Image (cartoon, rainbow, N blue to C red; front, side, top):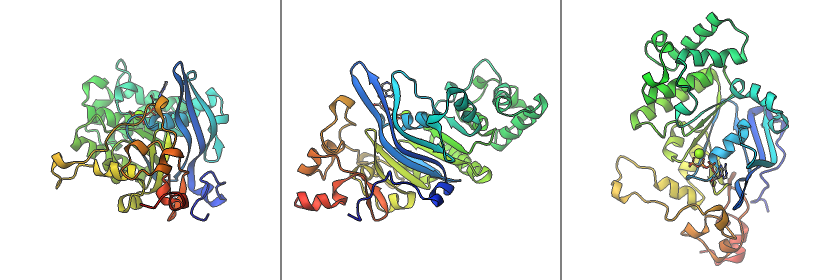
Length: 346
Ligand SMILES: Nc1ncnc2c1ncn2[C@@H]1O[C@H](COP(=O)(O)OP(=O)(O)OP(=O)(O)O)[C@@H](O)[C@H]1O
Ligand SMILES: [Mg+2]
């Protein structure tokens, strides 16, 4: 019994103090004509102050819907948060109205997306957009906003910030636009920065520069970060803690060191084998066979079972609980007593 603990246990006061964000039992479902899509299904996690939580999983696992739920940006209908708590510094964001959430977004939680042009407006200059973001949340003069915006551009290492301030987004390269997005997101010094695949569209060298920049700014400003990616290589660069998602559920949670030292869930090991390394022959790179099941074809038991090299009959029958094992959490029967009870243990 000591090996299985309920992750939704009440956090201790010390945990509350150390965490900027605590999410308990979040359920975000989409009600579509084809049926209910359980995009985020009973997901719990926390983000430590000044720490980076990496959320990793293949396409469609529920990473973006998790972050949109935290931001209060799930479109309803068809989306609906069916249950759970999202505590920002102890305050439940699910109890806030639209106006209160608008004030929280940008000021206390900011988000950057994969494609900067989804957030940058092509008809306004870079300077107009950063000063606008600043003046929505802070009562400062135009001149002060301009100075702060140029400081932010300098901070994100944009060369010639005074000149860039007057330029339009299309005049910048993809990497520079992503830096502008980061400047905009951080200009009001939010407590939490959510980055949803911020480097996927960039080439590898620019990707490394942006990740370094996020790491540096996190240190300088003390911001906590949620880094969403399908790439464990990105996680290795930035994360303190990791949550692995599969088909709307958490399958493994641990510190970044533990995950890389010893992945427990077969899905995490599979993702690990997908990281290209300099000494790998690309042809030999393993991939996890098959795809994430569609919402209307979820297996009865473990959602990963059809792709799992270790699946046993028990895995086809029951969804494993998220169980504590060696101080970490893993949703796999191999790490619970049930495996030994109901299988031959192979
Ligand atoms: N508006 C919507 N209506 C119906 N289903 C939706 C909607 N938005 C998301 N979903 C479903 O929710 C699931 C999770 O989507 P989500 O965008 O969170 O995936 P993701 O992990 O971010 O994937 P990616 O790596 O491709 O960005 C998917 O099955 C998706 O089809
Ligand atoms: Mg996504």
